[in-house]
Every structure is written in C-alpha cells, then in structure tokens.
Amino acid sequence: MPDYTTRTGRGQGDVFLFTFDQHIHCDCSPDSSAPMRVMTEAARDHGMDMILFTDHVDMCDAKTGSVAPYWPDCEEKMTRSRAELLADPPMGIEVRFGIELGEIHHCPERAEEAASGYEWDMVLGSLHNLRGTMDFYYYPYSSEAECRELNRRYLAELLEMTEYSCFDVMAHIGYTSRYMMRRGFSERVTAELWHDELEALLRRLIEQGRGIEVNTSGIRQGGTFYPEESILRLYRELGGEIVSVGSDAHMPSDAGAGIREAREMLRSLGFRYAAAYRRRKPEFIPL
Image (cartoon, rainbow, N blue to C red; front, side, top):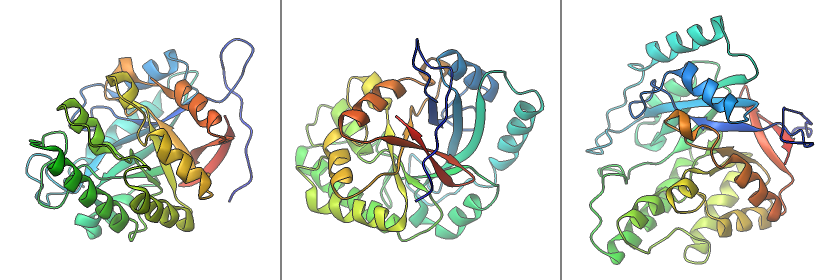
C-alpha cells in the first residue's frame, strides 16, 4: 500500500480537508448533456477541490445487452473535451481523467484497449447489465424471486470481472438495488442476504490491491449508498482499506452531491482514509 498522503483543500469553516468526487460524467457520456467545463465549475462551486471524470465506455448496448462496444467511437470527443478544458482550466479545482468501463468481461479485448488508450488516472469497473440482458435501468422486473435470481447472477458476474486487470476500482456494488427499489421490490444486495458471495468478491479485490467505490447517487434518490453500509462494514472487517467516493453525477446540480455525507459515514465505520487516484495509483487522503 502506498504511503498515506495529507492534502488540504478549501474545506468548510475551520476544517480544511481535500474534498473530491471521483465519479463524474459529462456530455462525453451518452446519458449526459452537460459540457465538461460546466460540470467542473459546478463541482468547484459545490466545494470540491478535485474531480475525476469517468465517462461511460460500455461493452454492451444498454437496451439489448448485445456486445456492442462504442470505444473508440467516443474517444475523439473525450480527447477534444479534455484538450479544451486543459487549455483554459477553471480556477480553484483540480481535474483528473478516467473512464467508467462497463461489462469488461463481456468483451475483454476491447475493454483492455479502452483502459490502455490514454494515461488515465482511474478506471472504474462497472456492471450495468448481465450477459444477454438489458441494463438494470431498463429491466422489466416482475417478482421478488426474479429479482433475487438477477442479484445472484449479478454477484457472480462481478466476481468474474475480477479476472481482468484493466480496472482499479469496482463501482457501485449493489447497482441492481437502485432500480429494483424504484419498481417497488424489496430484494437488496446486502451483507446479510448475500454474505458468502460478497465475502468472496471483496476478498478477491483486497488480494488484488483494488478498491471499491462508495457511490452517493442513491441517497439523493431516496435510497442508500452503493454499496450499502453492511457491505462496507464487511469490507473493513476483511481488511479492505481502498475506498473511492463518487457522486455519479450526470448534471451540474448533482456534482459533488453526497460526498461529505459519504465521508462521515465512512468515518463512522472506522475508515480513516479515502483513496484519490492519480495515474492509476491511490493516494490516501484523511477523511
């Protein structure tokens, strides 16, 4: 593990902590219309000292689940947006760059190409859909039993994803719960319900020196963090220390949302540091 790093930022009141959001989207992602500069300035205005852009590079079509990687189709826009921002960077905030690499194990050759296509600061590994199925966002859930089976398959595919080395942090474990809850189903990915599967997954990530993300999107949608607290508690009990925090913002109003709440929650669970990635290596920043 790297040495712990102390950074200070603008902070709030008499507390000067380096506050950062490492899961931000802009119009380089197909589900955002906000320019990179607008997202950057919004995050700064919401108190962030650093953001890391993680625009979508998915290996599957969201509505069909078919393997249809659009890298390098999006590479040109990412390159142009980065160059424009860096040519005249907004004052008062540091900007880093990564990608959210989805469904890596569905098309590992193209995933590896995307991960190595630029000197990224961080690569998030995500799973938005199972093999041959649409994104959980679109899925037509029909019963609690079906939801449970989908979660079983979801956790199995997350474990399979760890076989590939092209990501640094596993994003939003429990992503399925976000949409099952919206459709009125109670099935969740928690340490109580899926202890053995989650222990196997978390142990593998810890052994590999990879981190997990605390995704704050759920709390602004009436839900919880992803992963929820029982999973983070299990991760810590197993010796996990590498935790990234991100808002998963797709619009300016959400940039930096929930980051401070996530830090407070992590402190309450006994974590002392959050990981800020640079050149795909974590710096450990005091919470």
